[in-house]
Image (cartoon, rainbow, N blue to C red; front, top):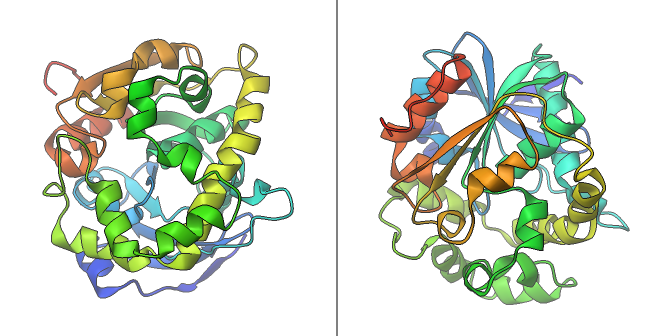
Length: 313
């Protein structure tokens, strides 16, 4: 894969990700928006839904003092390409998104690297670590438990808070049509998590998330959730009990998030990896934006080969 020409970001993205160079690069099936800064060991950052790579803006510059930080917009999100889902919808699996990011890292000359993901990005990192053990050196997951565990341990409380999993997975164009009727309302409602509110988001980041919430992105995000039900879950079910993540894994979750309230995260992760450590932080679902003072040092320690201290967090 070859690096494409530079891709000027929006003025807000450039301000939030100060010091980062933006590139448009070829993934495995979509063009990927990439922000790069720093020097040292490579570290890939993958965002969640309904976010973009700027969701790392409170921790990425500091991490770039120790690492070569590569933050990307996932396929279908932000300024990355939004290809059709394909006849079977498989274009938006976590495997497809992982292949995009492996291709980007290889094009940058990184054949082995660390990866941190939040929300959907952590699910991409999970599949990447399973499919490419020779590539992923260390993996950190922010505020998720593995997809297979989520979908085999559904409770009423989780379902009420995570309604969008099954709503967005409905047949097109039903969810897209309803969401697109008032995108600004939808984005603010979706980000306004129970007991946390919107004040944790900087004004610039919120503007970016709303800017990128186009009908085309909403279609792609729905394709992402449809792929989770129809492809990712069967994929994980086939691997369950047979394959495990080989690299060291760090799991961090918010004690006031749906993960902290409805799951036992370390027990869930232990089904998929043996070299595991993790702890909760006093946040909701967006720990890197709510408490970057806790997340950045934990990631920096872990990706430097040290054990992050839960007590310090």
